[in-house]
Length: 241
Image (cartoon, rainbow, N blue to C red):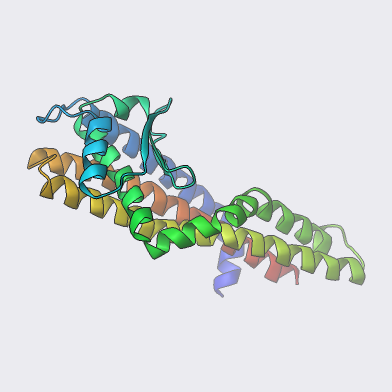
């Protein structure tokens, strides 16, 4: 029953998810923009706040770098760099300090050996391949199973190819799922640090929480969309068989 409903209304569900994801993404940008215009009372830039956090928590092997773009901030565990974007690195806004603290949360995760973070890092190569090629491989398998009115041998080969595609894309879905606790934990660490160390207080801390919560919703939406896509592919495979 579930698979029948999904195969019949899967496209509608995917379109709804797409619209919801766009709304969540727009809200994230609007929330960041709103608090980018509100300066923190401590006067620290994102880079200065990040350096203070890393030093206070014994993370001394990380280099803070300025990168171009907007909301392109990230922590790279391979070369131990914390990369802050144009709107964060030199800005003293509430949003900038919140985002910088979040990326410091990832650096601290790496420093203390946070297990979900290790799992996510291990999944990166497979997830990259799975997200790029998994759905296309599965669709080719589906075509061989039914669309081309193939022979029994071609149909069997199609099932194998379809299974490989599903397996590849499942790695991508698993990556999205593991990413959720990693991102949520980084935000939790960031808010705790900002409150404890007095980087932001009161309304400023609430503003940073709004920014990080809006960003977290984008990861939830991405995971939900990936799950829906995977289930749709599986439902099509069941129908072809």
